[in-house]
Image (tube, rainbow over all chains, first blue to last red; front, side):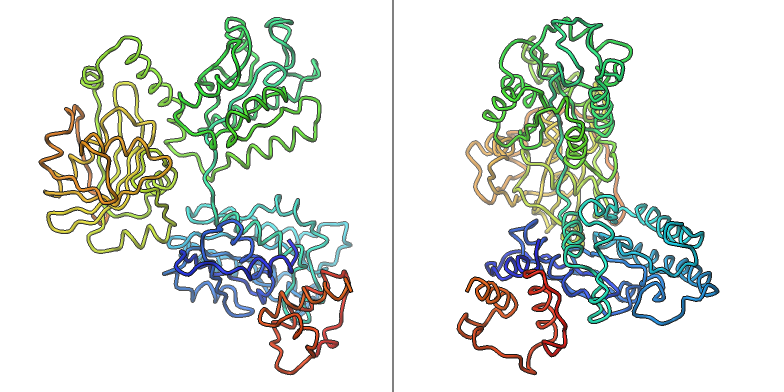
Length: 581
Length: 59
């Protein structure tokens, strides 16, 4: 992005009353154009929010962070440079570069890194924090020639690398990837010596834009996609299974099919991080079973569900897979080597990312892996991620048993040996609760999304509470599947947010949740801040059944009405009061 | 002419309140905000691929 474009973007006025996202940009240098670019990139990332960026004092990054009061802030962006660790590592200081000074610089960098770590650790508990570690070259202060890495230079880099690794241990901190920044902004074109000397702004405009873009993306923190649907022939393996047979397909270097082996390895990596993997293949189901049972295969069959293997249209397979996963097409990527199949699926599901597998283009394959990692990337693998595939299988089994055997839902649930563990409190550090609230669409009270700071502010309100439900039955645990936030006001409870994972449907957890609220708070009435959205049909249906009519914008359910209309509940209920309850 | 239009765009991006006519008649004054002057310099340098001396703009 050019500076002119950034200024043009920022000139566009937004309507008054739109939500404000206040970001603090912390740097030791004059933020100048970095601030402009950050505001512009954030405007593009978050088009329905008003972006306000505040900055601190020149030359005092650590002090700016130590003085910062995080209340009201939606995010903190830190652009750290070497001169923030010791001013002698910049060119505006004349503190001395004699060879005898360097060991003192290394020691001072160590001390300053600890100071910065402390300040950032404190802030990250209250405000989501994005940090770019030093991006500019170290001035040529070492005695060695430029082609040689000097011992003390490596010591400095070690301090910074350790600092970054240590900071990532804080849940609220995201470190900007230096590798990604290298791709967007070549290191030799980052430093603007004239700008640094003349105005205290050390970045070239291109570098400022690239760094601002990455910081903005980390601030947006968009949810990852959930599933990948892949073809088999000439995609997961090389060769047409129906033609060459189970032993004829290959994915190794000997068969000149190494890219397919890498693709399998990559899919297995995604699966281990909780990404759902399914197969849509025009093939013979029996042969596919045998192929997936080969001992040398890298993508294990139990990592894949469901397998849609038949001779029908791919779009039908994709539809059935989405149904089994119970997620929307915008959360899924489809990969196939055939442009025709890609076109057919894309026409049926325009919101889905459909990618042609580049079976003979090495560079395109490398880009595919990067693109997939970007789509499915997450900071950590949660318990729910580990359980996802298992629970999707269970839901499908339950549906099948209900359909095929025509078993009454009531009878089925009675024998499920289900238990619900409720946790009631106001601990905003429950990251899974916020994640569930922000990611869930189908069973979501009003579609409202909370930033971390809004979440914390809400739970600090008088009477506010956070309720989560952890579910398990004889088919296995589902983990934390339900989150509800509200405010207690005498015998009335206001429910402002409620979301339940689609994996937990058909188990009457939603009914048990309301039963629990009535009982624990001794409430006569629950008032829901309900809004119909394009996707919360299951919740609308739930309310309609209880109210015997379509829900209005403010749904009120009395204890008496609920007791009359709710179906029998068979869960064993336990609860725990959390910190601050 | 095209050069002049591009230059007007640069000025307009920095000085939002000025009309095209006002930009055409603008001159360096001591009332220029230094931040605006530095931003204008950077925009013009990037847009035209030139390097300018800040002293030329009285910065």
